[in-house]
Image (cartoon, rainbow, N blue to C red; front, side):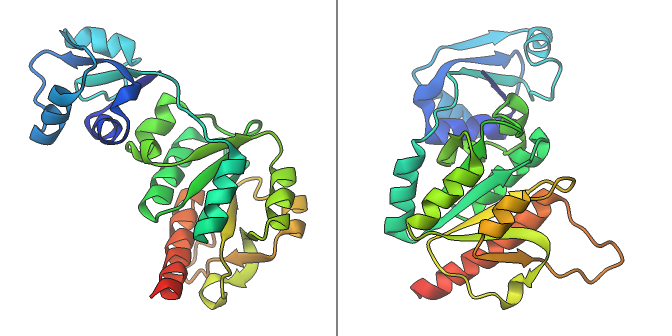
Length: 241
């Protein structure tokens, strides 16, 4: 798998340099001091080459003169993720029907920023973890615990039995500003088009929505997720302070 761009590679080097097989740098590329130092400390071989070769390797994406070849992303056992979530009374993010890789990457970035404990991705009908997702996450993906499950509904029913509260982010729900959240919790999000599966909505403890005040009555799923996670993080911090 290829990771390209200065910031994603910096985050990769910060979190898990052992995943890197080699680093390719275009000749005459200026690297920020911090990134350069991390590369110096990394044991992976560094190869300098012509920019056109990096263009070809990356499919002419905006690689910023640097590419890392890495082993495939490692996924967590969802059962271990659940145990940690319960012990720490934390927040889990569950993805449902998000098929756009750019959106998925942006969602993962927000999840990391707002301290989400882990992200659950369905094996089917969802964007997979690709170079585009990694790039859109700006490297945040390397700091998160990710799990893939075959059936989201079955997984939700399982974690409900374990005492985890399920909240779905969907239009027409309760105003998120007025909801008292219980922890540990899982927030379920869906795409703008398909939304969240009806069966999942029925199995949720609560359905929450973000109030709209303008003439446009919807938000991009990545933006909506960021707002919801910010609200939930604030509620979580109030419990611990």
